[in-house]
Structure formats: C-alpha cells, structure tokens
Length: 360
Image (spheres, rainbow, N blue to C red):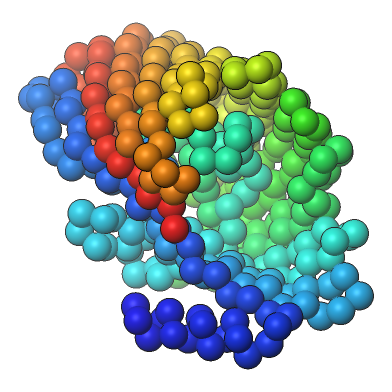
C-alpha cells in the first residue's frame, strides 16, 4: 500500500494538469437475523449500508475542454479480505475514456448500467435502503449490476436535462456458457430540489438463483429446492424504471417503481416493485433514513420495511443502527432479505444491524 501511495503521489506531481486519487468506503458491522434456515444468527456483516471497496480515479487535461479519464474500483469483504467477484481485481468498475465539459463523456470497460443511478436520487453519502432491503433477489439491478465489454455515454451531470446510453458486447463463448449482450438508457432531470430519472435496461443470456436469493421454490416454470443454489437461465431480463426525489426543508422524499420482465425457456413474468421512503435530518449530523417496499411476481408477494438511524462523527465517518423486516406470501414462498445469507423457514425475516462506515 505504501508503494501504491508513493506512485500516486509521483504521478500527481509529474504534471500540474494530471491527477490520480485514491478513494473508497469501508462499511462493517454486526447483524442479528431472527430466522436463517430455522435458527437465529449473530454475525459480522460487511457492506450493508454501502459496498466496501477501494478505487483509483485519474484525469489528465488534454486542452480545449477535453480530458482523459479512468476509474478503477475493487469491491472486497472486509472480514476475509477476499474480492467480492472471485478472480476479478476490478470487478466493481474498470473504465477509461474521454470527457468534455460541453459534450459529456464516453467510457469503455466494465461498468454499471444506469439502474445504479437510482441510489443517487438522495444527497451524497445518504441512502434510504440497505443492502438487505433491495427488491427480491436484487433483480431490478438498483443495487448495482456490471456489464463487461461495454461502451457508455453520459451527456453530463446536470442541472437540467441529461441523458445517457450504454451498450455491452457479448462475451466470447466459453464451453456452454455465454455472457449475453446488454443495453441501458437514461433520461434525467435535476434542479435544486427535484431529481427525476427514467431508465430502461435490457440484458440477454444470464442466469439467476431464485431459491437462494429470494426464498422462492417456484420461479417461471422451474421447481426448486428450499435454499437451493440452482441457477435458472434467462433468455432475457429487461428493467423499466422511474424514480423521483424532492427536498422540502429537512426532508428528502423519494419514490421509485421498477418493472423487471424475465423470460426463460419455460415461462415469462414480471417482478414489479414500488418503494416509498425518505430521509429526515434532525441535525446536519443526525438523520433517519427509511422506506417501505412492495413487490409481486405472479402469486408471490414481498413486503418490506427498513429504517436506519445514522450519526456522523465526522465528515467521513458515521455510525448507524438499522432494522430490515420482510413478510411474504404465495405458494412455496419463504422470506429472504437480499444477501441475508439464506431464507427463513417462515414467511417473515428480520435483521437488526449496527455498524460503522468510513469514506476515504
């Protein structure tokens, strides 16, 4: 790490018009789950309020408003030190490209699609949801979903009307598995109090594990064992989504709606999720963040509540206490909060967590 910092300092001083920044987030805590495969569990939990990662961001001024840019981010588990994406160093982001103050920016590499922008409908470093309280199985990709071999264009960061487009080329076929192509589009409007966003993302040839990620044993024509890690291949997955946030004094109110349409060789269906939430500042350092989600797919229903008390000890460090609750209904359906570690044996699952988050 000392060598890395020395190299960063050298490259930053090599040219007054170039910069490289080391940055990241460390998020760690202890969580209690009331029912995890039939037993209550207390364990350390990493990346619940925000993913734990480190990154390098660079920019070189090329003149006439143009700049060469890059962004490399590596997510990892702070409890084990293991990379979140096995065998992939920069699994969170690996991009390079060109940016212009007037024309926007174009980047190439492994990048998140525009669904991830829904997390930024609220002010920087604040978040209504936790990792546990995302839509079932995080299938709407709001929690972040990367597309490799991609080209991405953004017209700008606002204020006013902005737009973006992205295309991912299919990966080379390896054995019987192929990572399909993908595309994503965004239209966004931002002013001092309003942030509205509409996104469409479509991906071909991918797989999901519904029994081990969303507690269901019946999924689009497939019958699965309780908690099984069986992969269900999807011919395609498309997400149409809309979100809006509005600031009124100390309150930021937010609403999002996502419609995830999935097709297998046996059946098709849509997972629809409505989220209503907000952030209320008791003081600049102390806030409450919370929301309610309702999701449905065929005869299955998921209802979730999440609430977090968050206190900043400094500009970069905060401590928090959060509660996530899910109740479900439907044939063969058990409760399972996103990344809880496994399904409940009943139709309810609750997680309490306290932790600390540090930005650098």
